[in-house]
Amino acid sequence: MEFAGVVANPGVYEFSRRPDFDRLAAKAGCGAGFSRSAFSPDVRFPSGTQVRVEHGDGQPLIRIGQMNAFYKMTLKIPISLNHEDGDGLTALPGIGPRLAEAIVRNRAARNGFTVVEDLLSVPGFTQRLYNKIRPYVKP
Image (cartoon, rainbow, N blue to C red; front, side, top):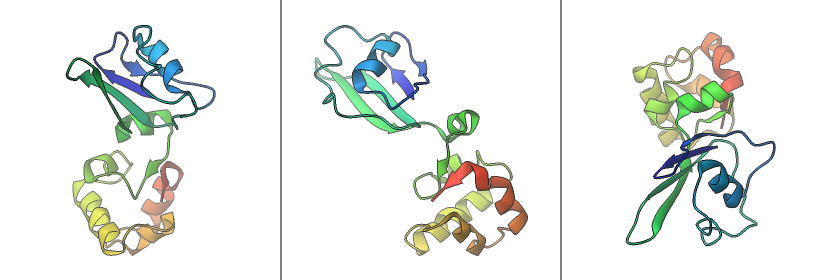
């Protein structure tokens, strides 16, 4: 989990199970009362989530998104082939900008990858490269 933006302790935090917003906010050093109004206590955040706090009109603006792919690689969190942009795909070993864009084009043409093996249909993608990146990706 990554907490970023206008918080006392921005950073990447590890939790033994999916945290709720209150646990995330406490780690990031958000003030008391800040977290309770943000999300239902039932909302849990999966690995690889980024919570960014920005200045709003008198209230903090909270944006939920995905961690940078390079962080995910470092933390051994699988990268989604269907959601990562071309820059993020270059975090994978052996994937440069040209092949990353070919993956993005192929993904768009087929309306997403159903299984990781679909990468083998990308022009220039080899079995050897597939074997290399397989542990790091998910559809």
